[in-house]
Image (cartoon, rainbow, N blue to C red; front, top):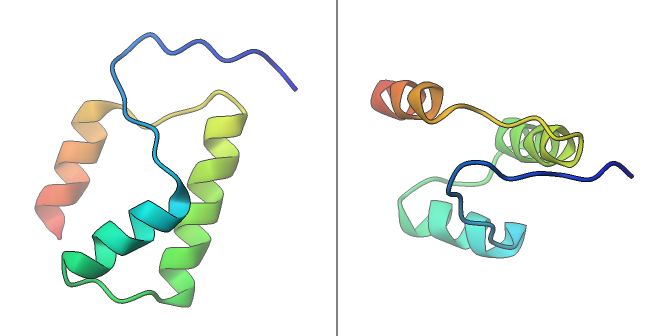
Length: 62
């Protein structure tokens, strides 16, 4: 496992809480969503993250 440096503010929450938040926001769990969550967790473990600008842009598309 490689060390991970967090150089920008972020909040880490358990995936169970994240799924609960999604459900409260009106999203229903789907295989695609489960895959995306799994892929995001793997990218984070490898030290890769999504920029805040990209996240904001993608959220606006929803």
